[in-house]
Image (cartoon, rainbow, N blue to C red; front, top):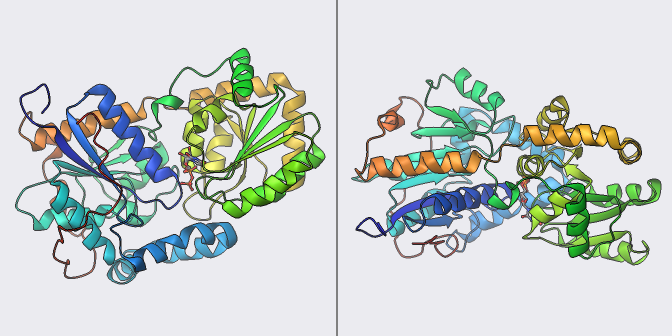
Length: 429
Ligand code: UDP
């Protein structure tokens, strides 16, 4: 442990690049750990689903997520519901998802972490199975990154602690029969760049100019990492039906959307700017007058930390159900699924600065900028417990909770050769 008489303590963060929210959450917690304890921990953020070490088959299957949620969100909803039961999950894990076990085993064998943290619904159960096969006890912690509705796959793995983003999901855990203390509500983790004090009106103006925009009323449109949620037609509707606003669209990984909108921008008289997958999302959310888009949990958590008013237009059936209502009830935004309503709502807010200010204040109240730091504290306490530096009795192996373990029969032998995911993110280690 650097500065403590030994090498950095290794932590393994399992995530998956289906959408952008899982990786953002993992990165936020990694940054918070490094900020709190510089050099003490070496963190490997690994994507066993889509990373370089994942099998071609697994990459192909999980690669369908983006097109599926963009083109057939209803079909995605059907699949989501179909798998939301112990029986169908067992089937899914034994068939399509079985290669994940090998990827996770390889990562654990190669990295030998003190703690495993799972930020994806498909990685916690494999982590528990790999851990249970080993000689040493490795705490496994789940960080749920859905906001209001958590799929069974988030909740059924026999992990040692579940970190939840909202009271709604805490209630779901209680209904599952999880004992108090097994789940902890912290909020959804966001990076430090979202956690600064929200920008004032003059600061928003200055930030807009630094991003190459004119200083006018700005609508930022986003559809998560995959750029989903009918962004093209919604952008057209805003440009056509609402005057005196500029629009910046973040297309994420949706290259086709970006191409189409770039052509549209040529005819939009400077009102439209188009961007691909950006690494400075905080700048866009901090300078927006209104953020428009699908009700992605990561985007909602980040936008509220930036005090941005939200107009939510779509949600993914299943996992994002309830998110829009959650925001509307908090007063932090509105829900406008129809094109006509969207344009009307934006025009209303543009013309009513007092209503917009009330929404902005409610958005700020809803934000939970400390979530990443709180989760970092829990993870490092678990690491200290596991490495014998201090006791964290609450973490004593609830992993043996009976009946919670599901999954395909034999676990493949760990293959130490290829570690899936990206290169280790060694934060200060
Ligand atoms: N994101 C980003 N760059 C982009 C688009 C999205 O960094 O160009 C991030 C965004 O800041 C958020 C995440 O991707 O952290 C999207 O998460 P959300 O839960 O809203 O949607 P998902 O993509 O997971 O469906």
